[in-house]
Length: 596
Image (cartoon, rainbow, N blue to C red; front, side):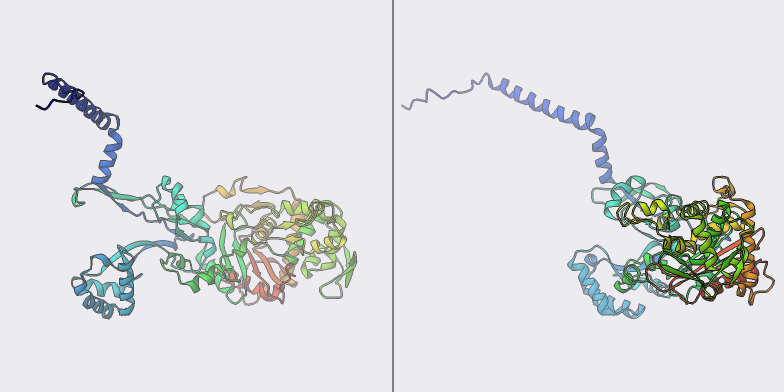
């Protein structure tokens, strides 16, 4: 007889139902807690997860607003781009060879190129591969006519930014690019989608929120296999707002044309009454449509971003030595200080010594004893050396500030703007921006250079436009602008009355009128009939960075109650402002006069 182990405890048959009941109760309780957690406490989050699996959103891209000139001509809009694509992983390879040859012959595409892209797509498990980007109308029609026999290929559509005039006003309009990964992290909260477009420069950048529009889409319900069940509703995308510029395309086109034979330069055409920009051109320029390409050839990319010519650089807003167009500042400093009043007459000479250097007259002879008007007419250096040296650097600096120099102009595309430099005694004491304080003092040579706009003066064409506009409009410092806003730029905030004596302003205007009547700017009238009286100033400036001379010409018309102001600048183009810059302004005046 085998005896059972005395240590082994057996559950009594009577107690088994009780244990089972306890176990079942605990299990039920745990299940109940889980149900409460899922259905009550975490209902919203699980509902969202369920909806995300059940509901799909087919996004609808918004149409970006157009950019128009003042007369409604389209400078930037959006167009549909058609691309030929394949889905490599879903192609039946038994028919591939025949399909490839068919599309190659139909659209005149190299079959080897098609094969290479197809194999690359297979190897890298791509869902979609572009075979031909941006089909033209003829190619699109051919495909549509043969579509039933081309089941391996599809047409994909995409909205892209389009610039009908290509490089015209490129620095003003600006360009768009897809947002990058780091930008998406915060831009997604503002409604941007991955790889969405955003303005990078110019008007496209400044008015991004106004132009871009809002995404829409259709919500559809799918089953567990991802198959379409029904549409849950459509929210149309919202088109962006159009924006009207102050630019006049006719003036802009001629401004671009006259710069083509120059190494580099800029043109600004402005209404001196309120600062409205009628044309702004910078050369060299670039084709805005480059940025709408999905594939950007390396050579084109390097020509744009790595070129020594810097085509992306807006020279209308960059600082250069102004030369003789600066002389109105020195003249006003002499007048406003009271040290050289309206009736001042000074003897001009072949050269005048300051410090260790003899500063010459540009004709090497002098012009005899002359006053302000004739000094501007013949652009005498030695007249303005004497005025500048007599009033001192800080008087010139004070007047320069009243004319808008050494400060930003207020134009919308300020991200491209350089503040420039107008020297002062404090600037020299502080180290001139490169030296130690107290070790770079102001010297006599500085004031002579400053008096005629050289070396210690660097200004932008837009700053020159503001200063001359103040002379043209009788004493108001205007804010240059590119976007039409009715009345705003005639307000006291945007059009500031200067405290410069009106008599002094009129004297400068008289001198500028003489420049055109019988002085260095007389050729502005050649070949132009019925042109209203013009006031202007030529300028030739040594390049402070060691390059060839710059050429300048500024003018406004009519001389009284002016309606148009032009700044023409040819960078590193030796020969004089009357030779190179003035003819550019003359061509613009011809077009403006004809339009009137």
